[in-house]
Length: 188
Ligand SMILES: CC(C)(COP(=O)(O)OP(=O)(O)OC[C@H]1O[C@@H](n2cnc3c(N)ncnc32)[C@H](O)[C@@H]1OP(=O)(O)O)[C@@H](O)C(=O)NCCC(=O)NCCS
Image (cartoon, rainbow, N blue to C red; front, side):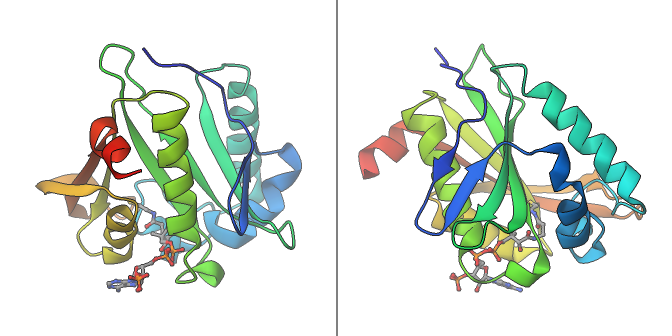
């Protein structure tokens, strides 16, 4: 059975994962939500105006009222700078299975932060929430995302053709990854 904690603060070597605040809107907009280099790898389009980001953050902050909502801001421990986001979603009570997604601003790519955040959320999902399985999918033309899934212990389960259509109306093949709680616990 899943145990829900909402979105608790999680600390890693270099990062703090914590709830978003409404005051994070400008940094979220500037650092990744308005950037097509990030949104091209996601389903939602880049934000054109700060009001879109404010609305999104308003919805996220409202959803924190539910203990079942897991959506973290990723901040650098040293500076407090907001660099990205990571969330667990589609958490199914019947199976204990869910999905994970994440984005970081380009300025912070390839420094190991994505791997660090994903590993922390996978650990939390299995050891605290007792999830059964965590899955994710990345566009096959976005190998960095697959790389961090592998580094977090996820296994590739297949390629789904034309799995998504992005905001530019392009269909994308996606590689689907997953990790089971049993496999995770055997490794730690
Ligand atoms: C995916 C994302 C979160 C990765 O974060 P990150 O902090 O850069 O990840 P890390 O630094 O921990 O690891 C990146 C890995 O990808 C590798 N990588 C980067 N670009 C690559 C490329 N073009 N081809 C293959 N590997 C690549 C890096 O070498 C590194 O692997 P290594 O540690 O073995 O050298 C970040 O690129 C991002 O936010 N992208 C846009 C949004 C997105 O794609 N979200 C996920 C949707 S599924």
